[in-house]
Length: 163
Image (cartoon, rainbow, N blue to C red; front, side):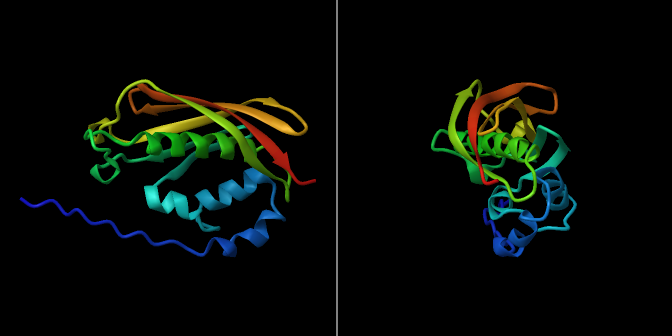
């Protein structure tokens, strides 16, 4: 039986959601993306990521690892884990910010603990803000499967940009 090895990615122009960015607190902006009121960012469409829980200072994002994400060794490329962790870290930070305030990553440190295979099933990155400063936020995240097995962890500092 042949396996279909094609992937079509479609996304909405990200500029469509930007006017709402200035009007909505970060947590509400993210919730509207999760609920489909606002379009998701293109990167989430590329990897099939979807938001789960969204709380003040905490957010989860889930993805199904698949063969299309393999590295030359036949496991899921670490870039997928890093992208998911970075998304969870940044969006957890965003959930704490007032309307019109943004952020940018200063750094990210990722520790890969075990290889990810498609058999792991959906994996979820959960990011949590651990310290809120006026200009810098600090966050940590873990990438786990449904059984709670940890595949990777990350820490990040994020610069608050704007008012």
